[in-house]
Image (cartoon, rainbow, N blue to C red; front, side):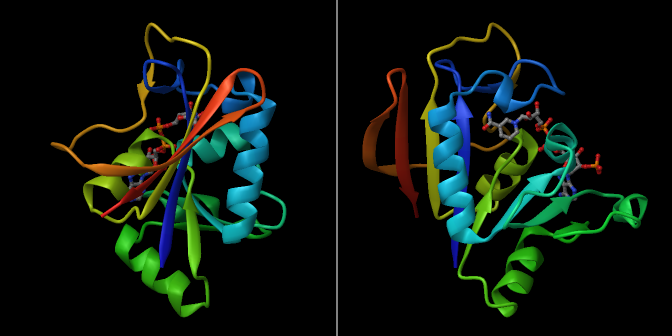
Length: 168
Ligand SMILES: NC(=O)c1ccc[n+]([C@@H]2O[C@H](COP(=O)([O-])OP(=O)(O)OC[C@H]3O[C@@H](n4cnc5c(N)ncnc54)[C@H](OP(=O)(O)O)[C@@H]3O)[C@@H](O)[C@H]2O)c1
């Protein structure tokens, strides 16, 4: 199964300046187009509860799997959205069993870190935006090192660069 990470980062590797900040507040429209293409192609996204709160609703045409330690808190919420405290491995097994061949891991930092640490990401899209944050949330932390292979570099719009890496 393809497990594709996708993120927009500042020049200095941050995915957000403040915990509740939405990426739409600073990332480009060109990045949003890439996000829509990659996530719609997968048909399903995995997201951390904090990032889900910044989005605030399910994403059209994509199943949303929200990782939280307290799924029971979200029992009333309906639509193409599921809340789970399962491990990343079990979530992926379950999605495979349901016929998905690809899944997009859309963050935030805790979730990228978890999937990277467990060696589960197969691909990674990173859009570098023309901005520096002097503080904030790193793309991923809490592991030693992970080597990747740069597959492509594409200028998107006037100001942004899309990097595509394969892992493993
Ligand atoms: N620039 C980008 O591309 C991009 C992409 C995504 C997000 N972001 C930004 O990143 C920020 C949020 O990132 P974040 O790292 O603070 O939070 P996050 O990764 O979105 O969510 C963290 C939450 O996920 C749940 N979680 C983490 N590990 C888990 C596990 N093993 N099992 C079950 N649940 C688990 C916990 O939810 P509970 O507390 O409910 O248990 C935890 O509080 C926001 O500002 C967002 O806008 C930026």
